[in-house]
Image (cartoon, rainbow, N blue to C red; front, side):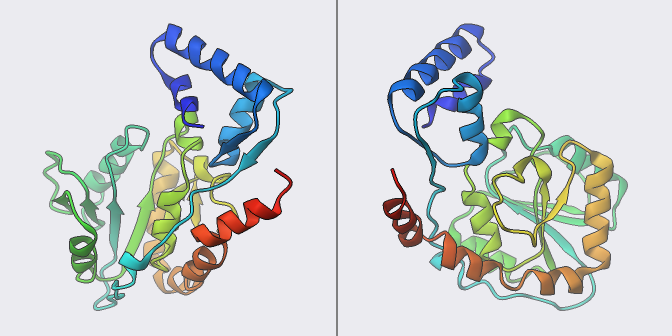
Length: 240
């Protein structure tokens, strides 16, 4: 159900139309959503909703299998790859990087005019170029930094599967906690808090070996529970 994102429109008329359409659809139809947050949002609009089934997007990570962990040297490196989502907390992240020149950041997917010596923008990428560049980055730490908005909470878990497939430490805002399912290996911080984001970053940097070892089974979790085959199998076995 994609229309739920319209609830975040700046146009009040659009929001009301979307809310009414969700009410009608949930009253008379069975619904499939990709996250617990989306389900809760629908129920908040219509407490007598018809059957709502949570089916996360299935994942196939073959294109990530060429990633090879680089542990040369002691320097740790933060990595983000993906679109520049407006509901991610870029201002706090950039402020942390500005105030901590010893923290290195690599961003794949877009470029911005941020003139910090410790931040590297690689621009748009394809899978091959992404993995090629990441293989050259030592001691990588992945970061997903959503804000605390409803749109952030109701997002697809696909990015989480993609990151988890690499078996690396992952720092992630807790607004995605319901979406994360059973990935207790993720390192959560309070979304929207620059202080707690900075604490989480420094904690993982200072205890890298511990968090790296703790993340070694993430890929197997994705393959066992969140492949398309498994997702569809669970759905067919459910009472839908």
